[in-house]
Image 1 (cartoon, rainbow, N blue to C red):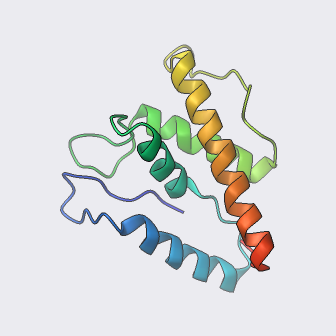
Image 2: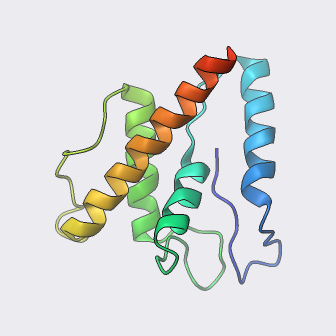
Length: 125
């Protein structure tokens, strides 16, 4: 599940995360595919730290290094089913400890919440 565009992207839409989620969930359910909630993690991170930069400023669509780090945490936890909290990986010192801890917590919460919500509704993702 991809992240939404942000400004200055020409297709920026403040409701894009919800639209992307609905589309991915519908198609994922039709295919019986594992959904990896990267976009929901981006949204959660932006809510908690509005000034954080997860996208490249020149286009509002490509992830920054921090966005890529967050996405990698979400993918890892979704695929392997193991929490990334306490993982210690910091991209060879590029991601500072505070940011790494924050992103690993966001990934852990997002993946757990997304899949727990699905289990309660009997939906497969």
